Amino acid sequence: MTAVPELLKSGLRASADAISSGALNPLELVDVLAQWHETVQPALNTWITVDFDRARDTLKRGEPLGEKPLAGVPLGLKDNLHVDGFPTTCASRMLATYRPPFDATVTARLRNAGAVFYGKLNMDEFAMGSSNETSWFGPVRNPWDTARVPGGSSGGSAAAVASRSVIATLGSDTGGSIRQPAALCGITGLKPTYGRVSRWGLVAFSSSLDQIGPMATSAEDCELLLSIIAGKDPRDATSVDHPVPPFRPQPDRPSDLRIGIPQEYMSDAVAPSIRARLDAFRDWAERELGATVTSVSLPHTPYAIATYYVLTSAEASSNLARYDGIRYGHRADAGDLASVYTQSRSEGFGAEVKRRIMLGTFTLSSGYYDAYYARAQRIRTLMRQDMERAFGDVDVLLTPTTPSTAFALGEKLDDPLQMYLND
Image 1 (tube, rainbow, N blue to C red):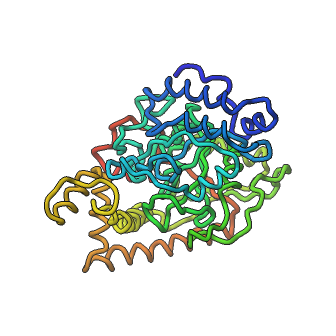
Image 2: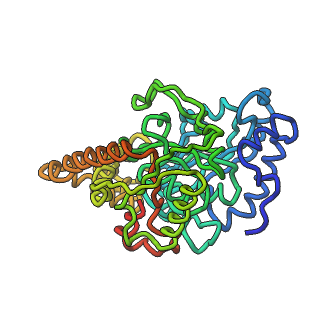
Image 3: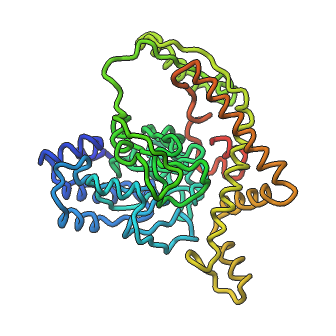
């Protein structure tokens, strides 16, 4: 990758401050992003839709930006979040021509904070994947090594932030879709607590787990984004009515921080290089922070992946039933109604989405519901109780984000189980 333009090396807060002070014209920033896009997009395939002229027009006719926290900073969002005027494809043929006539709540909150939008970022189809290889628009490549994956499903978002083709962005996370690509691309990503951020205008995958969160080059910039998008939304019944405090930590270092390392997370499946980094951080936290680092147990961890895939596939089967070729989305040229249903879904969905729909439909079917779905719900309760007990003894958990570093493109595509273990 060629040298990043100097103007794009600043983070979100620094860029907003420069615009607010008059030191930076946001139109200049859009022009630099447009030029840089021409350099990196062919190599990385991070974007599905871009429209820099729309961003320019918004800035030219916009209101004064000086008092707004994002002050005219141009942004792009993951392509399962609605942005009025842009397609929302979910990286699927099923929604390739869909244009929502409204903003998602998080989009509206960013827009009210001064952000302008110029594009939508590539992702795994309907957010189902851990490598950003299931996109109908082609795979995304890791900017640090284009022979490797960026992670998924927010792989386009992570690779764009890492390559500086977007200053910061939002992703969605169900079972790692912000955290894993953030780790594989070397940026900061946060999945907020369920209910902290409204999901109105997010295309649903698994409604009991989906969350929207920030992705940026620093924790400080993630804090800024989260402070803008968090809070109760009457259009989302699952959003919680809690105050949004300043998320920035206090300047004094904690002297009594208790860090727990789950012993079940440190199996032989974790790469030695990742274990070494965790050990180094543990030593630093004890030496520099004066933290107490202890081992904790989450005994139901071995059931996590199986539980996750039963529950999320069941919810995906239900949520994706709306794409039937009739109301909106891809419609096959077929004769009778049954053929429209069958061919539209067969043509519109990719292999991974079909796999999860079939798995979810099976687990919800008569005779199997109690054996799979109901049992998985009970195990989820036990896993939550494990966490509650652990947090009775420690303040935070230190864990690997993924069991391995970025793997090669195509390496796990033919082995769904190995791919699923990245969640």
